Length: 205
Image 1 (tube, rainbow, N blue to C red):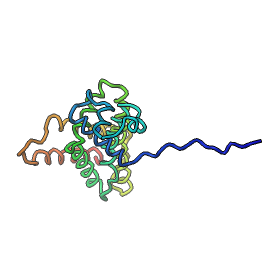
Image 2 (image 1 turned 90 degrees about the vertical axis):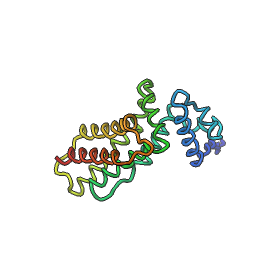
Image 3 (image 1 turned 45 degrees about the vertical axis):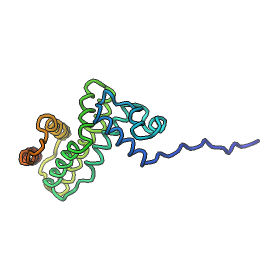
Image 4 (image 1 turned 90 degrees about the horizontal axis):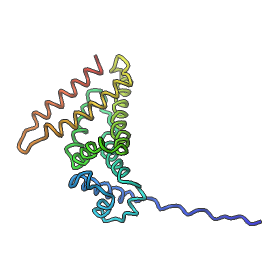
């Protein structure tokens, strides 16, 4: 009796540097051409990579879009702990605005706009943007409760609405009140402070 000692060859591990290059290329294509012209071929060409290397990571256009959204949301919104609920929420709002002001902002807006017409993309963005933001808020509330800053329990429904408000105000500000060249930050700062005050009022009342 013979024993077959052979095992299936393991696939090559993805190079994280190429992962980042492909994500950056995807953001550039989305910013320049929007979702309609966003194709895996265009992204691979922009990154100087093969479409095969892209498909090993993300098997579809929607999956690649989800990776972009996840990269934007998770990388910016994680690890917030300033020691107070006020500071945590202020930092969360600052990071949210930083996302929209950075190069990735228009890309995220393009994806959110297309999601209304693409159920697969909508589901991906729900998981990679909405649920990510909701999880961050849940974490901040848990930290505040452990510090004794909240005197009541915050319901799951309230956390869900807060996540929707945070995302919605960010998108609305990017569309309706964009920063203009030469315009001071006074209006933007005032809006951010008002948003912070409203969030704190809801959580502490």
